[in-house]
Image (cartoon, rainbow, N blue to C red; front, side, top):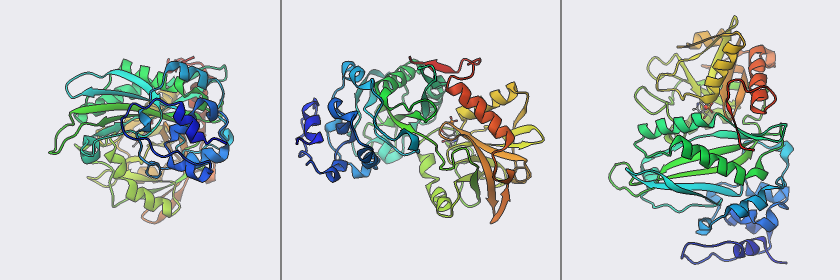
Length: 421
Ligand SMILES: Cc1ncc(COP(=O)(O)O)c(C=O)c1O
C-alpha cells in the first residue's frame, strides 16, 4: 500500500529548490513528522480518520520544518475539495489547533502596499532567523469566526472590525497593514477554501486567525523591511471546557498584562507571551483563567487573558472603559449594543475589585469565549461565588441573543453578518 505522504508528494508542486525530505512510511506513528498539509490531499483528506486527526493536533515544534509549504494551490483544487464535510468528530470539538487545507499569504515591503495575495496549501513557512517578528516581537494577530447558518449560508461576524483593529495595531507597531478590503477578501477566500472544515450549525465554528508579521531581516532595533500577512483557520468548539457553565477566575496581584502607554490596547503577540506565567500558574491551581488589574492603582479591573469582563448590579451592566491598556473587544462592543437594545443600562468606567466582588453577576466576552458566565472569583485566597453555580440571567440572555444572531437564527438588524454563500 502506498503511504499517504507519498501520494500527496506527487500531487504537490514544489517551488523551493531545497531537496525534498524523505518519504514517510506507512506507519501512522510517523505521520506527525510531516507538514500537516500533506494529509489534506484531495484523494485522502475526506477519509482522514478521527485517530489521524487527533495525531495532527500537534504543536509546530513537533513538525519538521520543511519547504513543503511552498506548494501552490489553485482555486480549482479548492472547489473540488470543499464539497464534503471533513471526517472528524464534530461533537467533541474543543479549542485545540486542527490544521485545515489552505492558508492565505500576502507580502509587502516597508513603505509599500500589500498586493498579490494568494491561497496556498496549509503548511510551515520559511523565515529569516533575523526576522523582525522573531527578534523584536513585531507581530499582530486577529481572531474571528465563520459560522454555518441553519439556512445553509456561511457567515462572518463583523470581520471589518477585525480589519480595522489590525490596522490600528499595525500603526502602533510600525508595521505595514492590508487595507480593510484586502483583509476581508483574504478572510473570505480562506474560509471558502476551507469550507469543509466549518462545523455543522450549532457544533462550533471555523476560527480564522489572521497574522501580520515583520518578516524581513533586521539586526539593530528597527521596523522590519518586509511584512507578511497570513491567514490560517481551524475548526473550534468551546474555548473553556466548561462551555456555557460558569468559569472560575483568579485575580492576579503580582503580574500585570499592560501598562499605560504600552501595547495592551492592540493585539500584539508579546501581550500574550507576557501572561503565560500567570495563566499557567492559575491553570495549575484549577482556575479557568486570570483576571488582571491595572498596574498603577492595582485595584481596577482590566481584562482576562483573552476576553473582556462585565459586572451586573441591580440591572446595570458595567465594564472597564477602554483607555489603551485593555483590548477593545469586538464581542464587548457588540454585547454593549445588544444589552442597550434590550433595555439595559450599560456603563463604561473604572470598575474596582470591591465593586466586582459585590456584583450580582459577572461574565466575560470574546470571539473565542463568546459570553462566558463567571461562577467564582478568588482574590488574595478568598473565593467569592456568583449565581450558585448557575448561569446568570443577564449572561444567559446576552449569550442567547448574540449566538442566535451569529447563527442566522435572529434577524441581523445591526447588519453585522457578512454572508459568504
Ligand atoms: C486580551 C483580549 N481581550 C479581549 C478579547 C476579546 O476580543 P474580541 O471580542 O474581539 O474577540 C481578546 C480576544 O481577541 C483578547 O485577546
